[in-house]
Amino acid sequence: MDTVQLTALKSKVPRWTLDVANASTRLGALATAADRPLPDFLVVGAKRGGTTSLFNYLVQHPGVLPLYPQPRGRKSTDFYFADSGRSQRWYRSHFHTETYRRLLARRLGHRPLSFEASPYYIWDPRIAAKVAALAPATKAILMVRNPVPRAWSHYQERVQNGVEPLSFEEALEAEDQRLEGELERMAADPGYHSTTWDWYGYRRRGEYLAQIKNWLEHFPREQLLVLPSERLYAHTQDTMDAVSNFLGVPHHQMPTTKPYNATWRTKDAPPEAVAEELRAHYAPHNAALADFLGDQLDWS
Image (cartoon, rainbow, N blue to C red):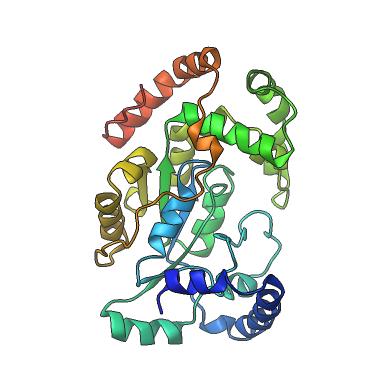
């Protein structure tokens, strides 16, 4: 039974049954943490940039392993930020054992890879250094999306979550004031997680190049793959073949290319006056990013 079939089967099981089973499995996983390697790669973002779709496409590959056990709807352990006080043993317990991976490798003919996905990993400037200190061979994949609809989708998600009382235009105007001092607090306190920095960086989170350069201060360029999310959706199989090349696993014919995490947010457009202001703001950022990547980004 592959991962997609297993996920579908789990969706039919009562939630309380899964909770009990997962609690028992977690105890066993902690007991065998020494046999559980750290993840081979991370999907590090961007927020509302296609990480959920990429995650679901990746786990369709028989040689790519999600969290163990795979909690319903969960892509990440949050180890590098919200659970930063947890031990490495706790972190390792979320991934498959080396024993299982060796057995699976015999069937696949190649070593399977494990991973987790969090759009916050690229956004918190402290995380790249934490990952490099713990696992310097880790590869990372970053999805970048046209920053105008990305900002709008991010804002709408916060409204839907009940944490954004302002209009989109008001939220953009308030962004600098809201985020003021948060980076300094984060730098001063390694254990501080800023929900303000996470929730309200609508404009700044679309300024991708600074985030990429911060990651590359700690990792060589060949360990980071940057992909436009528009390319993932328009040419899904070809893009996933490129991801397979980057990860060093065989190509896999995808059973489905439907997008994931698509809601009313993806079908709506931002107010045109605000969108025009954002397009002007992002124009030099996008040009610098395209030049840095040596890639064409059709985000006009």
